[in-house]
Image 1 (cartoon, helix red, strand yellow):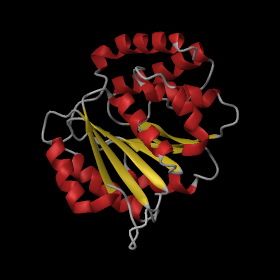
Image 2 (cartoon, helix red, strand yellow):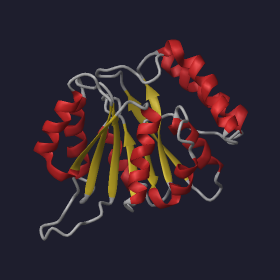
Image 3 (spheres, one colour):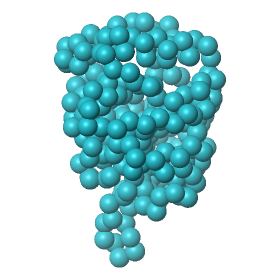
Image 4 (cartoon, helix red, strand yellow):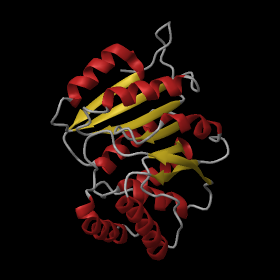
Amino acid sequence: MVSRCENSTYVTPELMIVMPVFNEEASLEKVIHEWFAAVDQEVENFVLLAIDDGSADSTPRILQRLAEELGPRLEVVSRPNKGHGQTCLEGYRLATERGIPFILQIDSDGQSDPRYFGEFWEQRTRFEVIYGKRLRSDGLRRILASFVLRASLQWITKVNCVDANVPYRLMNTKACACGISQVPEETFLANVVLAVILRKNPALSHGSIPIGFPPRQGGEPSVPMGKFAEKAVELFKQMKQAGIC
């Protein structure tokens, strides 16, 4: 589905919202309606791309019903499970191929609060990439994990990423396209790798906006805390193999 004007001539959206979805039946409908309402106040022509990453619950049926209700501004893609990072990359690459000027990545679990979107959109001409700086209220262990990741990235890659894994970021598509293309296909936590690649590019300007980050409304995190250390080691091995650090 695509956004079209009244004379059926295709109009390239100004913004693509990339939303990876995996087993989010508890939060999905509320989250999509809230985001549509918030973005509609700021952007005349946008599309929300919901990529179902192999959900096994009622998520696909909810997405189909929402697509019928909301029309062409909600595009739904379904695919076998490949993980959160690669799902995001699929959306970024699609936006790049279609020449959509801006990409906003958010998650579908209710932690990405749309009330901050207006400030992100207002700053889009000042920075090529804007990250949410999470004020986390989803548990001490998650706060600690974010701190350890940031410190480890700074030590290993020599760049300071404000919040490399934040699921709330606005990117200038043309400016970030080269970095997006450099993320290896099988990389775990692809958004972290992308943040490092973009940060290493001296031509890009980076901004950050503090955002609240409440507990999830449902579903399960892509990286359970019990596997955080294991996945972190895997991530750094992949970054080293790709020559990123």
